[in-house]
Amino acid sequence: MDKDIKGITVKKSEDFSEWYTQVVQKAELADIRFGIQGFIVHCTWGFSIIKKIYEYLEEEVEKQGHHAFLFPTVVKEENLTKEKEHAGFTPEVFWVSEAGSKPIEERFALRPTGEAQIYPVYSLWFRSHKELPFLGYQSRIPAFRNEMTTRPFLRGREFLFFETHNVYYKHQEALDQIEKDLETCDDVIKKKVKIPFLYFKRPEWDKFKGADATFTPDTLVPDGRRLQIASTHDLGTNFSKAYEIKVLGEDGREHYCYQTCFGPGVWRIMAALISIHGDDKGLVVPFDMCPIQIVIVPVIFVNKKEESEKVIKKCKEIEEKLRKDGYKVKFDNSDNTTGYKYNFWELRGVPIRIEIGPKEISKKSYTVSLRTEEGKKTVLSDDLFDKIKEFALKLDKEIEHRANDYFKGNTREAESYEDLKILLKEHRGFVKVPFCSVTNSGRECADKLKADTEGGNVCGTLYPEEERVRNGLKCVICSQKANHLVYVAKSY
Ligand SMILES: [Zn+2]
Image (tube, rainbow, N blue to C red):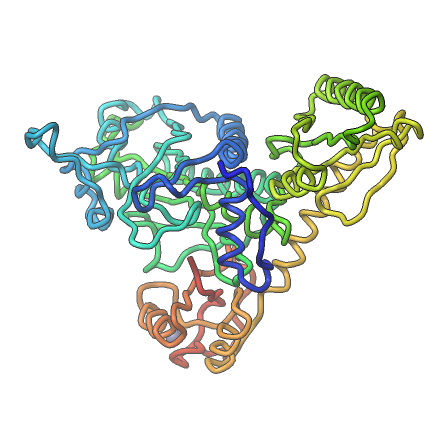
């Protein structure tokens, strides 16, 4: 990549969109020069972070008893339209219809999501209720949709996927799984990646195509827009009826199975990490997730050969020792200037930098900087290895604290349409309002809201539902009796 990359040239608070583009390119997260609109190259630095997200998710679902499988990336045409609502995906589908110069026997689609691909095969796999529950998942795979506007990690014609697809004999087991999926979001997205979010139950008109109910953790990007970062769906028996997934029950009769599927948006989690944790110097990454956790920068002077050799020897020694302790370390012995090295690693979000020069060697200490703090600390040689642990914790706490602080300040309340409109326009973020209904009868109000506010969306009700609606409260849009408190936001 370009060797002359300079730091980020805009402030995050002044031009978020340009800031995001620069971080993606300059921190070498993605290369957008592949040449086909909406398809990006995942570069090593970015993909190493994404791989970590995958590892966390795989670990969590496997703890619950899921096993991995791998289906082809293509879908049979007739299977795409079997579930009536799910057929809504077809306008976004890419078709493969030729091979060489000839049309193929029967065209097929690149998978837009997993259901139509996997469930026809599920109908062949299960015969008895005793074979259930079945908990399966696919990881590190792409999905394809013909999106018109694309942006790295937010929207692409090809994007990265993770999905569980489960089959149950009893509905309660499916509902229990939804709760476990929400716990997975907590454990991975909130605790490990340190992205705050609210859980919503989506309104009837905004459910996943073919689901009975959809639950999503949504976060807020610094431009004030809502970002859905995962979703889990109670599919009821809608798909099992469409694809004939049946088992013999205890009563000796055939029963349609219940199903759930869970799709953490691996790309979206990455987009949230970039946008929420990043600062004017570039990316900021939680300690465990960073491809390089500690960088060692030598401070040497060209005309002092003997001293320089001592410094390099010391750097190598520390690198070796930290690596043995299990850290991902880099000794940057390149020809770049010290200042360039500082900027380069800060831009990529490396949590800890250790500087070693003649001064440090003579004082038996090191100069250490944390990515989340201004200024430098002096650490005595003997204390370094204990201090690293302490610094890692401190950095993670600071990342978490900043993210939560920013998130908390972005939920407001309104009881009139005028107030709602002003809040959406001036502050963006979430606005909590009384609303008539999250069943399809409320859709007209949601549509009106969208039209009046240039894209203000009803995210849904908090899950579990937080509080009952006070008597006498009216829907801010139609003034009918309010049955719910919903959250409204502009969204990606
Ligand atoms: Zn209404």
